[in-house]
Image (cartoon, rainbow over all chains, first blue to last red; front, top):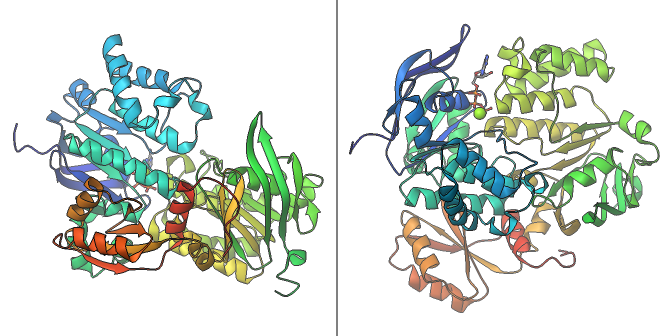
Amino acid sequence: MSGEAAVFARGLTRRFGDFTAVESLDLEVAGGEIFGFLGANGAGKTTAIRMLCGLLPPSGGEARVAGCRVGRDTGALKRRIGYMSQRFSLYEDLTVLENLEFFGGVYGLGRAELAARADELLPRLGLDAERGRLTGSLPLGYKQRLSLGCALAHRPRVLFLDEPTGGVDPVARRGFWDLIYEQAADGVTVFVTTHYMDEAEYCGRVSIMVQGRVVALDTPSGLKARTGGVDMQDVFLRLVDA
Amino acid sequence: MNAADGMSGAAIRVEGLRKSYGGRAAVRGLDLAVAPGRICGLIGPDGAGKTTTMRIVCGLLRPDAGVARVLGRDSAREPRAVRERLGYMPQRFSLYPDLTVAENLRFFADLFGVPASERVRREAELMEFSRLGPFRQRRAGQLSGGMKQKLALSCTLIHTPEVLVLDEPTTGVDPVSRREFWRILRELAGRGLALLVSTPYMDEAGLCDEVVLMHEGRAIARGTPDEVAATFPRRLLEVRGAGLPAALTILTTSPLPGVKVHRYGDRLHVVHDDAAQADEVARLLANAGVELHPVAPGIEDAFVELMAAPAGGEATP
Ligand SMILES: Nc1ncnc2c1ncn2[C@@H]1O[C@H](COP(=O)(O)OP(=O)(O)OP(=O)(O)O)[C@@H](O)[C@H]1O
Ligand SMILES: [Mg+2]
């Protein structure tokens, strides 16, 4: 399987009635890459991610993620990917540890395995001291790290993060990106959306989507060179406001 | 400061505000004033007390001590009178998912008693900022996350109250719409509205007339954006260039005592105190393929530094 892209899409399309939310998306993301999937509101990012995660059937095209054919190898796909949704859903009345165990359990991890994974993840997420705390009482930044933990519990090879840092302050965002880098260093492919343009700079490559289509795809410096933008904020404004 | 700008002419005025939930103090003695025509930005980490403060100002929550006044009325005693003259957008605004974009706007316009002619004019302006025009007939439940947020904002801005309180209005909103949205806020301020806005975006904090940085229920810095930036007590070197990843590795694997490194998009900020440290950094990075320049701090530098410091008194410019 060497050389195969971790995320591959060709002609991936999704229509809702006569509205096309994602129009013929072509993508190839390499293993271990941090890929920034940016775009305007309503451009189709969440729709595309939900298709790549096998949560929404495409209207057309094909995709392969972590070696699985999307729409065919559904069980295997679920086990090999992690997904943190835009409105992440933790159980507020469970403790931190219980949430982690619950989500790991969904993926079929056994008791001993879950305990070991929790011992490994909680300190890395900076949540060790909170393991017994009720999730509902945690600040947003903590919940965000816990959702990441839940998406990571089963050691996925590809991680889809849909606006993981929305509403988070600059200090907590840096901490979160440290965690993303750690995952990538471990070989996990990270596919991430964000509306914070400083974070776009932290990605290896970035695509920018407008109205269902990818209008640019390159490294941040490549995009700046091509558009004449001074930073990614400027690049985004130039491409999206055109 | 003239009388209209001073505390006495403030549209929003908060004094000695305190609020605890159970045993946990959320706000511990906060003062704040926003004059008509001004935008005051509330920034701070989660749990700093921003939302609690806003809810008290809007008369939705009673303080344990202190007072919040809106246009001279006590929010705790006369919540109805206050709410008639104030627009509030909570962090979680509920739209009607089964109503279309147009129907939601219409609903809130009616709720606020906006006359039809005014509504039409305003709606056109809001559709422009939000780019929701082509989606007027779509049900709110089927909008993307950012589109929902922009519709919620539009529903809040469909009427023109005298005071606006917006709790993280631009979360999930893309950079183009954020820029347009701030143009609208500035225009509203120009018409004499007083605005209290919380935001996790430091570039937005820079667009406010005054910024209050809250931490653990208190204001730990306040002033114009430049004044808040100037509370940063140390020196900064900016590192840029193709060798940035290498530079970051060097600085994090052989950390210098008292020197901190933060990523800022495509550059690093190296926080230090004296020329000797700056020279040492320059020596370490001599072959890394980067350029170093001393730079003036921004709000984000002050924010990051103040968060790292133990919470104490208020830093004043
Ligand atoms: N179930 C649905 N029915 C109709 N339209 C839908 C449905 N789900 C999504 N859409 C539309 O598809 C488009 C893309 O939505 P999507 O959520 O993928 O955008 P996004 O890029 O994630 O935006 P944001 O940055 O705001 O999160 C939007 O116009 C949205 O209204
Ligand atoms: Mg989305």
